[in-house]
Image 1 (cartoon, rainbow, N blue to C red):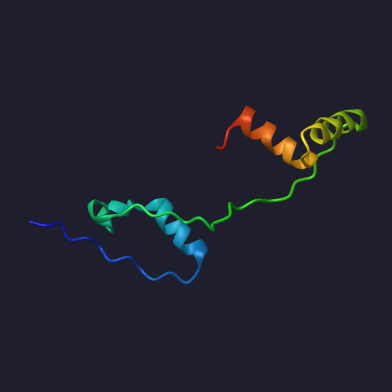
Image 2: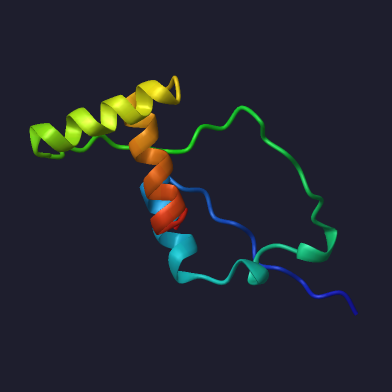
Length: 88
């Protein structure tokens, strides 16, 4: 006998939907055996700006290193963070 899934409720806001899924098991609402893999090439990860104070000499060295790689210094800093801290 096929398992009957609970209906997915309508949500007033994305925040309410996020809160719902953080506290509920999606397997109660979705038949994952019927799921298909998709790609979404146009999605952009959410990001936020931060302010970071660095000694001038350090920032100058970062800019020189970035210039040698022909890339913006902010991109070099992000690449280093991803390499050393991970993607999360």
